[in-house]
Length: 218
Image (cartoon, rainbow, N blue to C red; front, side, top):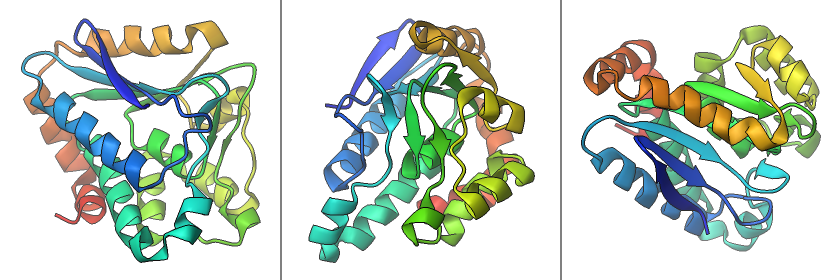
C-alpha cells in the first residue's frame, strides 16, 4: 500500500504496489495522504518515492478500460493530486528510484525538485508510442516546471531519458546511486523544511496559480 512515514519534519509518501500505477483507489489514497501532510503543524517538507525498480509506471490502463464510467472522474482526481502537490505550502521532492513513465513522470514534475537514480530507470512520456495525446492540463503542468526543449523532445519522440540524460536536459536536478536516492532527497528537503510555509505557498501561487487552478478545478 502507498503509505506515509516521517523523518523529522519530512513527510515521505512511498508507493509500494509493484509498478505503482494509478487507478481510482490509488488516486483516492493519495488525496487522503496529502490531507494528512497538509494538516501537519509546523516545519514541513514532502518527499515521494517508489520501491524496487519503479517510481510509477503511470496509469493503470487495464483499470481504465474496464471501468469506463469512472475513468473521467479518476483522471480529474489524478489531476487534483498533481495540482495539490504543485501548490503545497512546503518544499516537495520526488525521489525517483526507478522507472517513471506517463502519469508517474507528471507526478514527479509537480514537485519542486526531482532526484533520480543514476544507474537504472527511465523518465518518459510514452503517449506518442501509445497513440494517446496528453491533455491540455498535462501539457500545462510540464510547461510550468520543465525546460521547453526537454518537453518538446519528450512529447515528440517519447524518448526514454536515463538519469544522466534527464539531468543534462534539465528534467531532474540531481542524480544519485540507487541506495542514496531517498536519503539525498530527504536531506535536501529537510534543509528547507524550517523555512516559512506561508512564503513558499505565496511564491507557488505567484508562479503557478493558473496551472494549479486548472488542475484542481478551483
